[in-house]
Image (cartoon, rainbow, N blue to C red):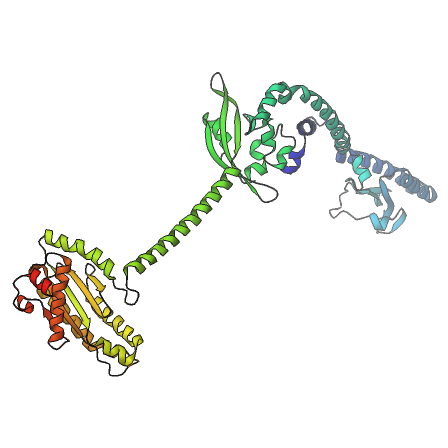
Length: 517
């Protein structure tokens, strides 16, 4: 219903309202002053008079026993009065003396014995006694056909006055609105200036009705291309989405008499697309702070939103690409710093990390220990079982070494079957204990772990040296640990040796021991 009235022009809506108001006033005046006669009361009086007159004639003819005249009178009365459906003369014993019309069809005795508007019973007296009754059936008072309804004064008034009045009011209001139309009061140069604006602009009165809108506003939606003047901005379903809201931005601006800006709005287009808008509403005030209306602007940000979405998509793809690059860089870093077989640090990465650690420990007067480890008889393993088994042995030994390391320790595959461990902050005794645990684990578990070769026995020789020996640099420290390892090899293998002065065959200082090595 709202959609139907929304399609009417302002002149048609005004004419419909005026004629509805006039008809309502006429009905109220009739209810108070009783200008239109009551149809039921009028029928009652007429039918009472007709029934009494006919009863008097019939009574007179019965008393004189003029039966033929009686029949003629009854038949003529039925033919003459269109309101009468049937007439019958019934004696007191219930026998019908004479009837005209289909009396058995139309007559229905009133339950209480009292006459009604459609069934009238008049008693007949003869010789001062009740002789019988005259029974008259009348048509219903309520109209039964369209023609009968049109004869009712109120209905006839509605069918004549309403269309004629609506047409008269419509012609008058259309003519009057041509002079009262707010758009006609706006100069063409002002409307042209509004049409130049890229933003959609709608000027509304304090009731929310549109009094002026520009071309950009009409381009917001296909439904806005029609007549917008006089329509309520809050009732435009394409603009509000058809959803009820406590208060629209322009309503808030007029109520609070403040500018409402930066409101986001989405308009769904007929093709399913969406237009993204930024809405601003500024109240129109006159002297005395009285609000006369509001200027509402609509900035179309659809293209900017689309570009932002593309930018966000590109940034997401860029982040994914950056993550892939970082992942590849990490893989390259691992490849560059780690031994591909064991995962231990390679020699270059080990030296780069261990040298600063060596100097830091010396500056802080803290100890640093170095363990050199070498797999015993590894060449025999390769020659006997092949390089595949040899690689498995190297991997298992590296795993055993790393299982006894702290997060701050450094493990390096220094050569083919040789490993180097740096333990910052560890004393000689701690380093010896770690080396011994590693040696025992390798002896007990590594050989049995190579399941493809039965009775494979793997052992490892280790040498330990620390800063307390007086090494001046990392190379010196590793050389001392290697001399201790050499001593383990020379004295039977599968053992741990701590470097001491006696291992250098009588040399007195570290530099000489290194030079002799």
